[in-house]
Image (tube, rainbow over all chains, first blue to last red; front, side, top):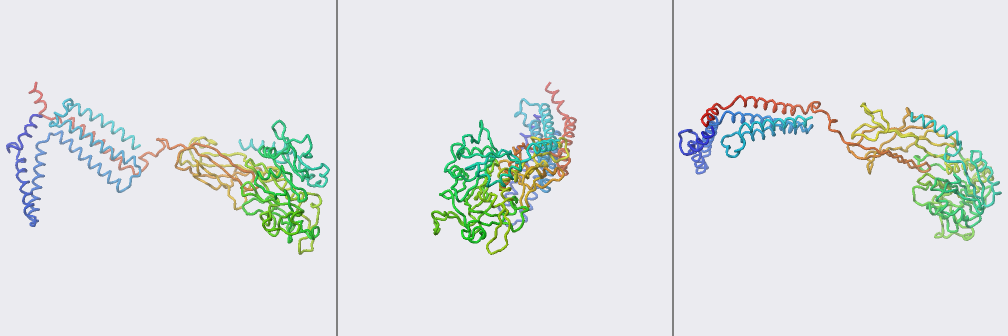
Length: 162
Length: 468
């Protein structure tokens, strides 16, 4: 898997054989910015062009992500997005309803933040592109570390919320 | 149990000495022992109240206030003596030492005889000033007795002394018949310093003044006036911090038989009225010799006022912050021959301080009939300890003129909350969203781990085979 990923990365800028996204993006974005800078008064056409451009950018990035990301990395990203949502909700509740049992807020919010950080670490250590940065850590080892650290985090949070 | 024991002890004490709360050995110092005949009623009253009186002259070889470092007498009364000094057995130092060992002194002055230097020095130690001639004569041209001092105006008729303020207990005028004056014949007055230990008991009327009949017979120059009006104390009390008492009576003659029985007439009136002297002499001697105005702390109890295990312990050494606590103190007052419950004067306040360096609380103590007996009144207050841990004192600091000083201090530690004394988070409904947050995180993490384990990438095996 690792060689394949590295290959794709090398190829992307030079040719459009593997993915359509790379060249298209590269071609469109400069054009859009160019038009907005040269014609500042025609805001409607400029913004339309920019909007189309941005939609295209996002669309291609998304497609690229869907096609090119391994299953486990997608799983990690979904989990991290979930943690962001849960953390944001807890923070919002604290802002709106007050922080009365402050330890409960710290434990609840801290559990999502801590879990997010641990999961991000797992993502870094298991992504094939970062293999060279962690020569001593195999994905299995990274996952075992992740389990142990998460359990410690959960133990701490449940204790701290009392 | 504790109050029962103290009650038994109290009963025992009252049986042993039906007299002054501190002892019955009284020393009377006179110029000549034969002089006591003039004060027979005053001294007879003292004896009938149980005092054992020893009469001595200052010159006597056997006179000594101490024996082997202990007091030989509990009280001393000084009548005017003609000698300038009182000899080596009654130096000011010895007299102060006597006060320091909780002995009491009643000291009488007279306009005829200058006070002994030893007594003048003792008084100046206590910030009580006498004229430089060591005596003087107080006269009043508006409040004298027209029967005996129609010309000299030197027998003052004074109203019975009421307390200066209504929050001071009334020891000398309570129960006195209306319109019976105190006769104050040929006496001297003293000036009191500003100290809190000194109390004027009888002040001179506004029109009275003190002069020296020998040197100022014709006129008194304004700048030579020693004192006039209410600044002159005719009878004064000093109570040391150890509650030893010293009373100064400006006129020894007012204690004599002659003035106990005399009939006097005020200026502008025709009616002859008896004097209040006998009762007043009894009360001033009673105050000086610790028979009235004596307070005692019987017991102090503080305890937890919460429905928890261990709340029934008296005087624990440790509390927790924000505990509910009840403090009770039992006070008695000695009244001539027995202990009675002490009632705080109207408008006065008995207070409890809960202090660490400075008071965190200063609280009104109210009577507690449930723990009071006829011999003792309990005062109680319930309060919540401050949100501050440290070493605190329960302190009752009740120092009032004419009453025994009370300074009762009980030290306790106040600890902070233990980690398991806080309410659980699930008890607090505000914490439920955060509990749910942890629950969601943990559940999602478990699901993530399971899905991770079952989502092994398909290509990996192939890659491994290839490398093999």
